Image (tube, rainbow, N blue to C red; front, side):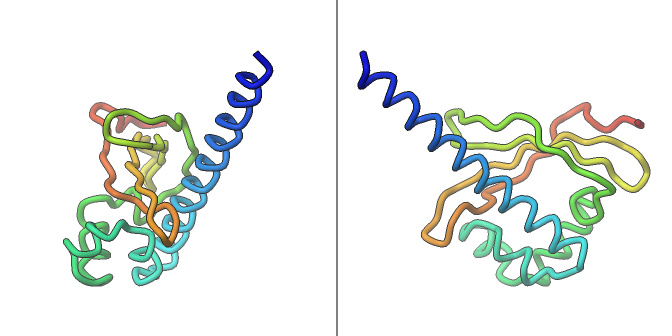
Length: 130
């Protein structure tokens, strides 16, 4: 029984560490977007995303056009951190400059360079005025 409690404590600590690292990655990318530092923001994208967009300029243009709330968030806060069949994910509530609230799912992947963003999905029905 004692080993089981120890295992649960270790698993909880590891989960909390991963959650902190994931949230740091997302926060760092959001900060980079606010500074129009697309090269730095691109570093937090997964290798597959980097291959898809080839360079930080293409990536920055995609974010500006497709995810304006991520490019210029008025505020953000972390919601649920969990894992499913697609892997670990972090839900983030982002309020855009017009006061609309969006919930985004950040799918994450661990790489040798740390946690990277594998994809972002705006969840349906989440843009409402605050």
